[in-house]
Length: 285
Image 1 (cartoon, one colour):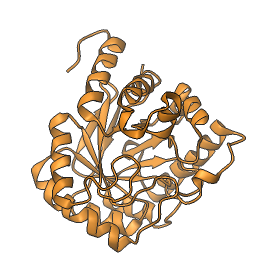
Image 2 (cartoon, rainbow, N blue to C red):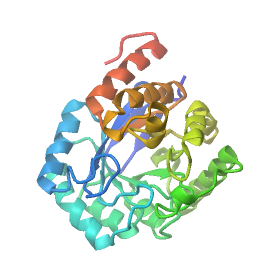
Image 3 (cartoon, rainbow, N blue to C red):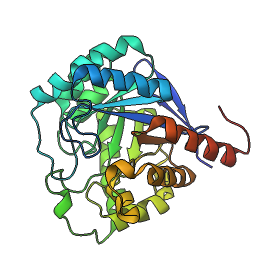
Image 4 (cartoon, rainbow, N blue to C red):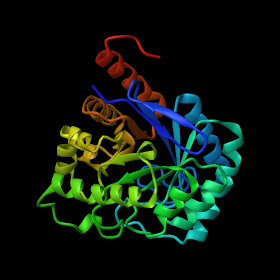
């Protein structure tokens, strides 16, 4: 059974563990691996975000820079020009948690001013030394993800010689940085970083042994939706990976994930409701 937690942000709180929470993805980018360009227009991004909420998302994850392997970085100014209009439009319309998907402290700070509750940092505080202070000073929640290399280099890395040890050591550094900066335990979520500097075989191993992260005694988020390892298993393109995502999502929940970051909220909501009902041996809403 998953250990229950509470994730607390400045003004909002969400219980984790009794049911699986879903984080709906809103990519305001022209080049994300799964839906690049579909929601680049702010009005379409806002429409998509509201649809994800209606489908049952518990958290929205808004990002203005693709971090797929090989992606070109964008400036903080460009990133802000993409995300702030969407945040400004969405925040008055919903009380659910909103996450800003960025590794830049300047972007995080401005997004928090416009109503974001959580910073989702793919680098686990590694890319920008100012990020931990921004999170601590704001009282926001934070998702600390493990990433080998950078988006520009991760696809060229050799397989890890110590996959689980490397993830544990790097995440421990991220957690220590959080604590030293004044970020308390009930504001932190960990993410093993599926696909970020790991090959398909490594991603399968991480999912199968996801419970190794329980030693941190922090909630676990997994982002596996439509990712390449699913395509490699099924030999299918990204737009045909929903059923593979559903299967992998069920395993992630059974292995201890508290939150799933997904593109297809309505469909994966059905999956996790059934898994949650089985594991709790009762009907869940």
